Image (tube, rainbow, N blue to C red; front, side, top):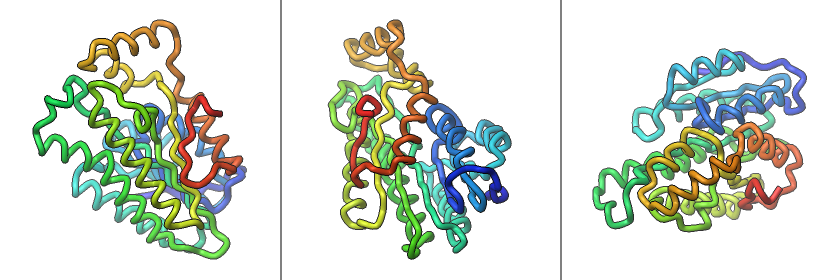
Length: 261
């Protein structure tokens, strides 16, 4: 499932770097920035649902890729098997796992419209459960190797902290993920754990936000942000995350927002 070892001049040698939701938007921008940072003996593994877009990016970056729907059991099996195969290699001295995959859900619905248990469970399976399963699988496969560093990143949101009308599913998932990774940081003091909120990005997700959000006030707010040029380019936000990872001075388990940096 993964490509050959990288032999470039990047500062991070011997790194196993995994990015989920890598085929578009923030994940794609981040993968493009991370690839040149990876030095000799490193591997970049990209995961996403969209096979064609993922394959194009993997070819461009000469990285490995695993097309997998993390919201399905079969997709999780495929992704987990690829991680175990990659990370059992004892020559890696560094693990960097970026949990970026996520979705908005049906933001046309208010709280009281959300009564379909299967819809809700499917949403949380993809947006919470898959991040938990993949991270625990990766950490077990990599193990606690003396002298090695392990960093886990959760792509968070202001929605983890603030309620947005019509966004009950998204806000709940982002809040749950933040807390889940805070627990990991407490349980495993040898890990570096970061929740990064990338800000309002100019992506397909933001287009959905300003056209499909059920709450009129929220929809108009997103439309104004777009008209006034307040949306952030994905690569600009990804560069800030890269800076955080390079400096490596954040408290483990911290929630850091784009605007905090």
